[in-house]
Length: 99
Image (cartoon, rainbow, N blue to C red; front, side, top):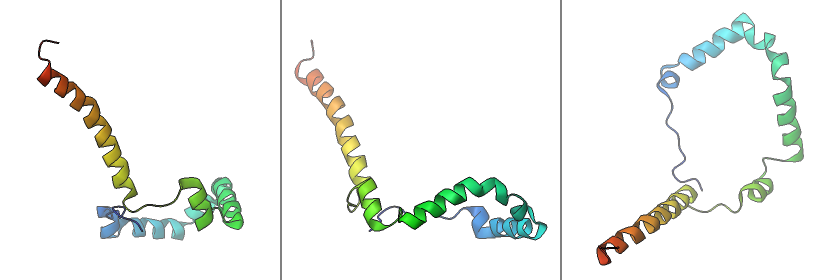
């Protein structure tokens, strides 16, 4: 379950600029020319795919059990911590104005 993780496409993607640039690079042979430069990343990705690095059990092992609204829980925990720090200072100033 993914809450709050959908990204809006950029204006260039919506207008088709990205697709046109990729098509032009492929037609000119730039993609094939630069293929040797990308060999390390491709080899790493292939090896990870073979051992199942992006499979569900590995993701759970890396990131922990997914929880609904995970980013929201992190934000609320952070906000509660900040509020706790400043809330204590405000309460102290209200009840002990001379301190």
